[in-house]
Length: 600
Ligand SMILES: [Zn+2]
Image: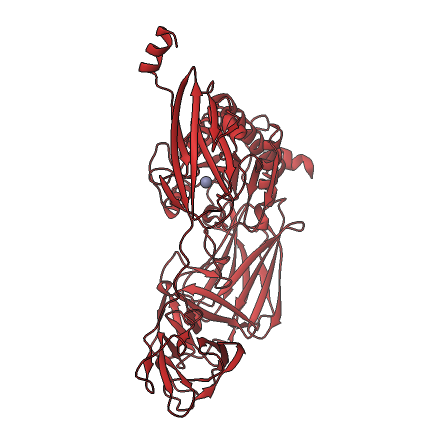
C-alpha cells in the first residue's frame, strides 16, 4: 500500500453500512432473506464469501437462505487492500409455546402429560359476543381416546365433543333465539374410567345472548368494514359512515361490532366508534319521503355541486360505490323501504342526469345517480337535520385557460411518511420519506410553474397523522390529490427481481386518474408494477376529491434506487406527473364557457 493511499484511508476509511438486517441479531422464521448494504462504489463486496455486484450508488444486495438455528451473514468490502468485515446473525424463533391452561385433575393426584386438556385459544379470543343464529366453534386438544365434553355457563348440559383426529376434539354451539345472556368461560370435562375426570375452564370469556342492540355512531371519523379480516393497512372497508347513524348490533369480535345492514348483509365497525343504547329499538323499516335534486347553494366559485336530498325518518346506515361509463354513484340505504313516488329534478342541477331508485331487497333501497360530466370529481354523503340524507356531487372544475389547463387549479401533493415514519429503506440507507419529499417538492415547483395553486401536506421532515393530511387537503379546498411514495418488497423477495412503477386507487371513480399517472410514469422507461384498485391506503379512501397514490419506483431495488436518489430523475418523475394532471384536466374538466357554448 502506498503512503498516500494509507493516508487517504486514514481520513476516509472504507465504509460499510448494513441496512438489512437492521440489528446485529434478527429473529427470522423463513428460509429466504434479503440483505442490503452499501460501501464505496469502487469497492468489491462479498456476502458470505460470494462476490456481489456493487452498484454506482455503492449499494449491494443478495439473498441468503437460513437453514441453521443461527445463520451468520458476513459482509466484507475490499478496496485498495483495505478490508472491512462485519457479521450479523439470523436466528430462527423458537417454536411458540401453546398457551397452557391450569389443569384441575379431580381424579388423579398426579396429573401427567398423558392426561390433559388444552382449550384452543383461537377462535375463543377475548371480547366475543354472539347473538341468535351465530355458531360458536369449540375446539380443544386433550388426551386421545377419551370423552371430552363442554358446557356453557347458564346451560347445565354437557355436550360430548367429536374427536376429529387423535386428541383433537371439536364441536359447534349454535346460539338460539331465546338463549339466556351470559358472560363467562366455557368448561371442558374429560372423562376416562370412572375414577378419572378432569375439568378445565377456557381462559377467554365469551358473551352470549342479549342481542341485538342499538348503537349510534359517535364520531365523524367512523367507517364500516366489510369483514373481520385485516392486513397492514387495516380491514377492507365499505367506506365512511356519518355521525349519528343508528346501527343494529348483532355481535362483537376482536374489538369490532357486527352490525346488520339488511337481512342478508353485515358490516363491522370498531366498538369505539359506537355508543350502545340501553334498550334495543326495532330496526327502522323506514319509509323514505320525496327525493329532491337541486343545485347546491353552497357553490364555491371554483367548483359547483349538486345536492340530492332524501328524507328519512332517522339516520340510517348506507354504503356507496361508484361506476364508470356511464358515470354513476350508487347509494344503498339500509332499513329503508321506498314509499317514494315522486322526485324533483331542478334544471340548474346540471351535474345530475337522472336519479332512479329500486328496492333491491327488504330494507335496502338503492339510489342510482347518473352524472352528466365525463368523470367523477368527488361526492360526499352526509346527514343534515335529523334524517335528511344529503348526497353532494361535485362538478368538474372549470378550466380558465385552455393553453394552461392547471392555471389556478388547487392541487394537493402529499409526500408520504415523514418524521418518525421513515417508510421503506434503500440499500444506501436513504429513507422513503426523504425521496418522497424530494420528488414532492419538485412537483410543487413544476405545478406552480404550470399555474396551479399547490397544497402540500408536508414540506419538511414532520410526522403527520393520515387524518391531519386529509384535513390539510380539505381545509385548503384542494380539487385533487397526488400522494407520492416509493415502493419496497418484504424480506423474503429478491430485491433485484421486483421493480417498476405503480399507481393505486380505491374507488372506481378515480381509476382514470390513476391510469393516466401510471401511463405517464411508464413513459420514463420504468417497468410495470401495475395499476391497483380497491387499495386500502387511507388517502385513497376519500370520496370527496379524486386521489391517486403514485408508487414511483422500488426503493428496495438497487437499480431503481439510483433513479430515486438522482435529482434529475426526481424532476423527470415530477414532470411526468404534471403532464398527467394536464392531460386529466384537459380531458375531464369543464372548458371555458365560450367553448361550451361553441359545442352546442
Ligand atoms: Zn410509502
